[in-house]
Image 1 (tube, rainbow, N blue to C red):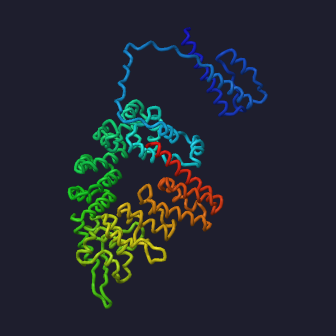
Image 2 (image 1 turned 120 degrees about the horizontal axis):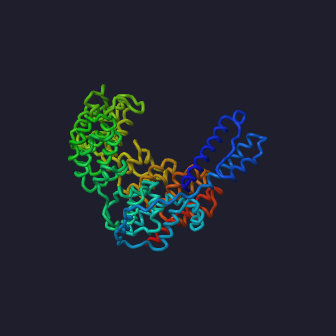
Image 3 (image 1 turned 90 degrees about the horizontal axis):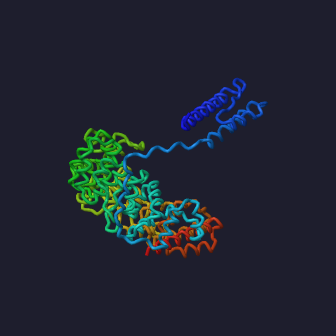
Length: 549
């Protein structure tokens, strides 16, 4: 018998013996005796020496012997004969990347940010706090990319693994990886997302972006949405043509998100496509198409909504002056439903109030200023009959956000709050959404005034709408509000959301003021630890940005 045949026979015997052990374990030693073992004389002898006075213990002992034999007793197989085909040629190297390498301190910082969680202690010792490195990585990647650096080759595997796990990192990570990252992705299926990720076009990224047509037809859904969104920014007409080319074959949930990509640079050229989408078989697609059409003041849908709004809301002269009279629609006819007005409210609101709100939110805001000759500020001061005032203001707020009308958003928000002043900050609708319509500087100033007067309790979403890093005044307002919260006896975790945001959005220059609050120890040990952590994180950010130059 040849050596391979002998080995095959031994393996067969070993498998049979293991099956016998499994059968005994399943049936029980009271129904089936503990089997012996074969394969080698040493194994058979060891199995025979097992004390069988206790069948259950004997079974476990024999199973242990068999397990050791199975793991350690295998012999290497005979190597196959060499193939006649020539070996694969050495692959071509990656294209040159002309971008400068990272400075050495920045390279070490990237290694720290990419390290496992077990390295966080070392990072904390360096920074003076337990900074959340995972949350600082996106900021580092964006800053490094903006400065035109390329990622160091030894760190590319860890960088691509991080981007694989977190899709929001991919644009910056792929851009920093450059040609070498794409070369690696061609050889590692785990990183194939690199070949389908289209980075924003910048001169510093190096290399050419992947083939957009291949991404659209072969990429994952998130990659297709990203590609469509970026193409929309560069060439709106090409993006619309691309979407048209596969629209009829897309799933309903995909069509819905693809429509969202058309929000950027929406023009009258998109109206025919969106009008056709009003007849889509998916309700959500119809509603989204109607919402997009309502942002086009000259669209046919906007004109139809304006006619309905005129019929529902009229400015009349009452005994004490002018007043808005409101008469909501009595029914929601087929034409209204086709224009995106649902029969019933998803929140359980009264039907007529719901229909009224949908009409007013989709009607052009210029309708009211043009036909009354009054500014938004004056219109908002006029009384509304029969208790419809809140409905009217809420619908106008939705329209201001949808139509990106800064004048109406400013009027609905009201003037920035003042200490001891009246009003300010409790506008109809979502203030954070209204703020997002304003320019970043005005947004930050209004939010700072709100925090100075009202504190942080209602400010989380407003702060999230502000540009990062926060302006000096907004940063000072947040730090001051945290100081007041510590002095009032509140717990730090009641402001955990704002604190997490502050670690990423406060300007690093605020570190000294935060550290001073920690030294004062106002609010107890919990606040001392909180301020120490925040100050340390700000210093960590200052160091990592300085290392990038």
